[in-house]
Length: 178
Image (cartoon, rainbow, N blue to C red):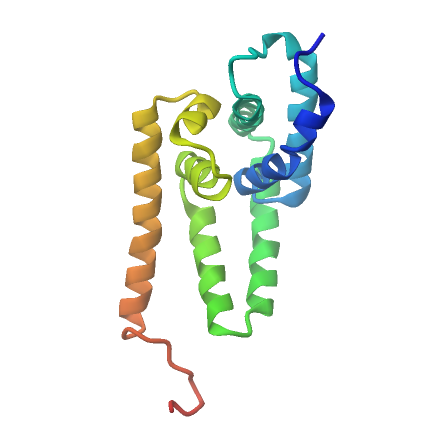
């Protein structure tokens, strides 16, 4: 018998799906990953410790399934194919400068190494504490802080280099600068 209720897991579904999307870079693969994680949680409910955060436990299951799948190479092809389509959609939608900037940040986020992208998503996007992220990823808190720092530095470096290359401002080609 489980010590958690279905309603407790349901409240974490949006965050789990978002984290899965950040890991897989593909909506269909993310949905499959969340479904597999929930199935694994149900099958191994006896391993849940009530003194541990249910949210961290679910994120740990999801993350471990992703890593296992990545090692087997099953999700890699789907991720790259989905990324190309996602990037094309983003470029087509970009009608304003901030949309272009957000697309560039999203692409840079997607280009981060898996470990850095996972930590950045858990802490900065999903709102987990460093300790919760450490529990979810089964890593020391110092490692979490280091990966987070490197991920943020990589995003900042890209933003600084883009600004420098553009001469500090974006210019409209073929139009008039007022």
